[in-house]
Length: 90
Image: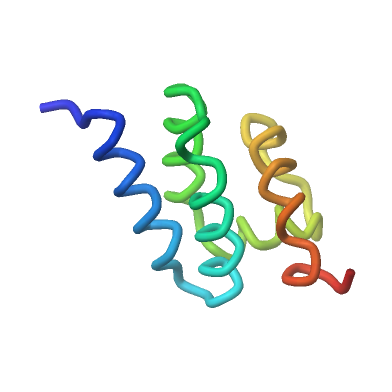
């Protein structure tokens, strides 16, 4: 059975709020609340894939502490816009 768009967005919002580290809870829950409804289905799938990655890796990619996988570059750039002050001082 496939998941409809509304159910997927609800699931992704929940996964964005319940991360392994508090910084990721803050960054991703804010991003999800603001942007998920406007994402294309392909971008939602990509975000779902990103959420399966290790939180410490995602945090490092957002904070530009190390290079991120090419497929996530544009998505992480969008997330990074709202993450200043959480990943590094503003």
